[in-house]
Image (cartoon, rainbow, N blue to C red):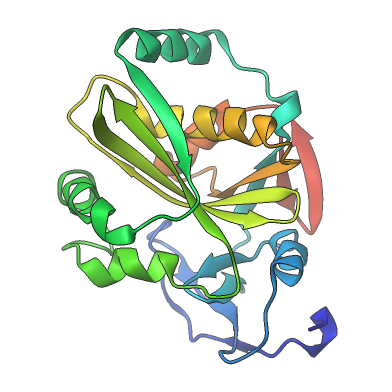
Length: 235
């Protein structure tokens, strides 16, 4: 399928979950279209993301705050605090592995814990199995996970879409009652794994400068952000 043949629709404006004072609209792909990873990669470079088997992007009349973030793993330069965190994690028997055939059901207890303890004010509370399973429901795209462990205990999961020469982070959840910054470790581990797999770009989803929950994404660099239809570099 070609980009010009794509059928799209727009949602009505509704409350924005990131910026309370804003209204949000989304443009999304209509179902039952023959999407492919190659087409998704083109759309990813145009601010699109995946939800289930469909793709979407913000389409807001009065706000352009959502900026896609991408990092070239081979150029990632860890800061002093990130190196310190990596070393601290190693001393705690922390490690990670990629799972190319993930079973979402084994992750649900951790997902349930994460939503219930960290996002009680979010749109996914209270958690339900369907919320997690939908992230894995896409028959035209390879989906993998980066699993974090302390010793032999699963403590974190990062869901990744596998595209030609790129990975796109879908969602990260983790054990919240540990002294390790598992959310940040997930990104560092994904960059390390992507570099080993010779992946050219890791997409981290949206960065919104006025959203405190997304502030951590700016700490990983050098990175590029999609601003006004142009990728701009940040050190």
